[in-house]
Image (spheres, helix red, strand yellow):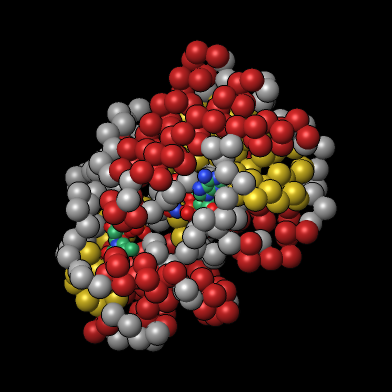
Length: 337
Ligand code: NAD
Ligand code: TYD
């Protein structure tokens, strides 16, 4: 049986990945290391927490001795690093923890991977490391890194460290750089779940700036199949962009959400823009499609419909995650906008 260490497996994408692997791969032990920050939630794993092939470990990727012990104890042969501070707005109000987890945490995992001769290190990165695009063109794997936010700067630093460990010590790695994910279990600080949650409560929908910022949306399950394919098939040292070929302006996405929920467009409220807001992201994913045969399984319209239906069917999950600290966060982030 193969044994993989998944970090951040109680977060949005990590939990979707763990669910997919446990459901679809019978011959894989998943050791899931997660610090359970505000973004980590064991409810995301529900019945999967106690699966035979799953070991959940509450801990920090910055804890080197713990990481090494897990590698030894479970004979880990690959690490898939999802753990991160992941929200741009939070990186603007408090960048330090982004350096601690995204940079120092990745360094700790790389040192363990090197010293324990791990077979493959997968770094889950982001298209935001490439910076922002104008109206034309797409990011390819050859686009120079030019991050603009503290979040993307921390992810770019981590990518450079991964390459440096490959170059210097031969750590066998891949880096995946995906566009904006959406789907079940996403914490309602990011655009799509925040707008769904607000619309369900007939609250204003806070649109930054002119609302014409463009993101390239990727359904989370499709991201997970891409990461798995890289783990299974990619030659070491290769970097892959992952995108859903779904460029949309924020306002267009918001209007689709309102239409499906039967809510009026008068809920839209234009608010103060995010400082340094990247205008447009768009991914050229032809490398992973041509070389590994991956492709997304849903269109944006299908994926969005599934996502909204999931939130409608999981109101208890939503109520739990927006109780407590979330209200304080919302007030701080949006109260004065
Ligand atoms: P998330 O914020 O939902 O989850 C992050 C998880 O990491 C949480 O479970 C949290 O508890 C855990 N974590 C945080 N710090 C940790 C630490 N020090 N040690 C152990 N666990 C820790 O994030 P997400 O949206 O699922 O993103 C997962 C990865 O994908 C991140 O690396 C992110 O940069 C990348 N990514 C996300 C998107 C997106 O649209 N969400 C797009 C591109 C790339
Ligand atoms: P977000 O989900 O934070 O992802 P990222 O900034 O990493 O791309 O934001 C997606 C887009 O939506 C981005 O252009 C900012 C915008 N946005 C709003 O207009 N209002 C909001 O309340 C949020 C959270 C985002």
